[in-house]
Length: 153
Image (cartoon, rainbow, N blue to C red; front, side):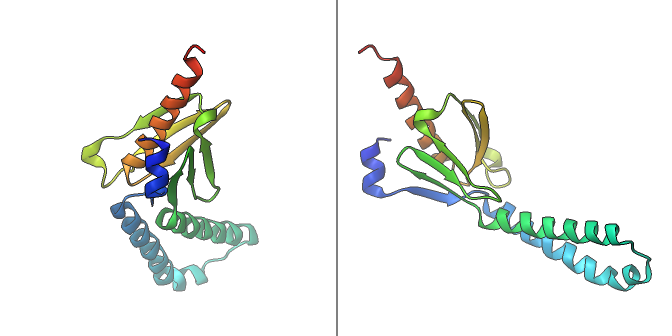
């Protein structure tokens, strides 16, 4: 996949997680919230200290926040740059990558997102994409950059 082909068709983009995983995240968060509402009468009868209330509230917020990002996280390949939105955004530039590892098993694509381990110097990041072609497209760009670096001039 060349740069010209990507520029002509535009950037590649996909959800970071497969549809099944996103649906499962919504179901689990809704179930946990429903269980919390169902448990509310007995929880109100318990004696709570301020730290335990804060911990309970923080755990609830973390669950909802992570569920939100599983549903709405996107992975995008534009030119030589791979980005993924998440609780914190990740970014990788093909020219700066020193090591790659694609973790992908096609029979499990619907339940486990293909992922790419990207090392840029000391920084290591995982990029997930529901569409493995996006990750392999980035890996091809990295390979092109590495062969250009090694080619005699």
